[in-house]
Image (cartoon, rainbow, N blue to C red; front, side):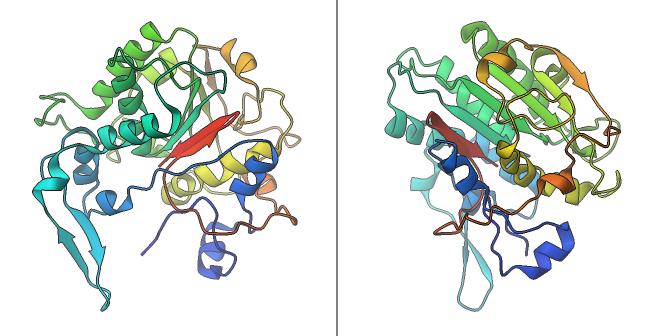
Length: 310
């Protein structure tokens, strides 16, 4: 099966042929820019045949089973009462506090989430702002091609609303409490198109965040999987670009202050300018980069401080 990683191994020729990517180690690129990088790895909880089951674990701790691959290649699901104490968002919050503490600090924190990881980023930040003891908030949230299930969910705390509605509530709450926080959204595939059957949509992204609709020349509009899966790779590789705001592409290298000026502007784009960077031109190889280990799924931190969640 397919396993997402931040640094994709050079030996994975099948992956390279499918996604038309050169080998690159985005983590090394960020480290060279002065960042610390950390991954919140929750694949064992997210490895479900139905995405809605993984989505539920973000919010609710009931049936918090986790996957284990056996020696013969089969998958077993382990269920234990000790794993049902906390949902994934609460587990991440505890790790966040352990790593960063709860007091204010001058080092900025940047959280990045992809797909249903965008829900995890928002739910984590929501839990922070509702906890009066926590004073150290992220400075910047980046939401990459968000995904939501379409139907209302009856488990706590959604209680009959859709996950996208919960995300909209979280954005409003976060912006009310953290008035200086930057939230940016990059849409790259039809996963974000509520008119289709792929997933739900949160309208607050356009109204309350710096919103960029990135269109790829590398993949056709109907290559939804390729567009969606490669989004983190292109975002992280884009740290090589200059620090000038580009309304048509990813902007990780743009300063907090520069993006803050655009809150909550809406930017919609279709790639037409041949002189602007595109998905294929940014998938370059840093010849000096060689990650010491493969870093798997989920989250990027900046230290200047640092975090990415998928």
